[in-house]
Image 1 (cartoon, rainbow, N blue to C red):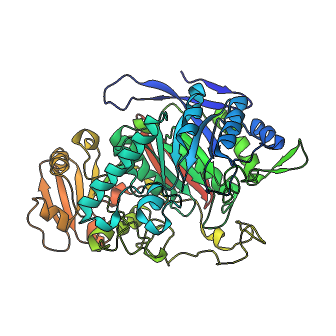
Image 2 (cartoon, rainbow, N blue to C red):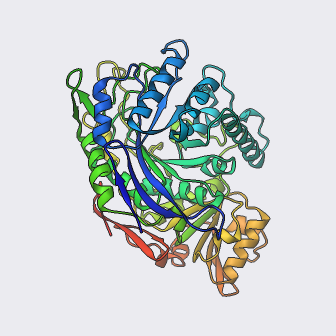
Length: 536
């Protein structure tokens, strides 16, 4: 039986989940809700009072961000840990351009069971894909992208760098390393390296697409699943109305995440220790009192009213996918409009029709919502905010004063899709009725697993050149169906062609639904409008 426990500072909805090893006895773990909490030390009393009122159970905060311009890290660390102890909040030490010091990690580890680990925000964005954004203080990059010889070499060296970083934090006392990514890429590499994948949704993303990638990474590698509902939209904060943010919280909850938190709750462009109170959630009235904003009221209602009234008896570990994309992660998500016509951070590795093939596939799976040119908003076909030199000086840009924010909305239909990488096993693929195979390469073990699944009745719609290179003969161009046991391969050079779509149209679900099945239960998030859903 499910139990729900609510206090003023912690909400935990107990859900039945399975251990990562197949066949182990299910265990109970709490679902947690939290925020990225700006560090302003000493912590203003109204902030502490507001956090009690809202009812979160987790906070992530920066204790080191901008060298030589912030308060001493030791003071910030001690003050923020003390706040979390007073409120009973689980917490992470977050980092971006600069790692928390070993001393800060040791201090956090002393906080008994509250410390959840080190969360690295936008991990590969800063430390691999964009070397020009490298950490200013000399923190190590994951790998030297200029030395990559090919995609396989790039992927292997990236995983080695991620594994080393994870071990660094673990050796310093962190129970986990959590990795967020600014695009829906390399979450599988994070998970393979031992980290907890944390896809970002909302922000500049198609939320269901990003979450499908993250769920697949967590399932394949037996990790927990965290979700970052990011309220930034380019330079706008908050860049999304409260209604849209709530729909993203509901998506993460009903699709089985272990923890979901809001990013963009405060002005964390400032150095650690000086970041300012969380204006996206509250305003300070006087030395004691506060006023919750629309976003703060929404989060309070979600924590204290919605979750207790809507218990969840499953997690993502119970997912029975309708379809799975199997793809070597070459980092091509279509972000070419943002000065990025390269893969793995090096100009020697370029996107091509093979790396981009899955972009058109996503356009079909989402009923045309993503378009064929990318699965994030870093592309010319979507509206971007104006480049105003006065932003963050004379004006704080938000969804209220930048029309581009209104262009981005929540609802993107999807029917039970997940994404696995090129190493996925038969045990993970078996029983999934529809498989897609795409990209530049696949392991021989995974190819054997796909063949077995098809022989047992699955349909595999495969990128023709990749299938032909891996032993499936008879295709030259266009669409060709090849029977194999009880199932069939459908080979194509265009996932969007009418001939290809005819073979998998029945799996697409409905254009006004997000539908996933967990064990014997099916969750349907039905579109009410672009920013709200009805959950059945």
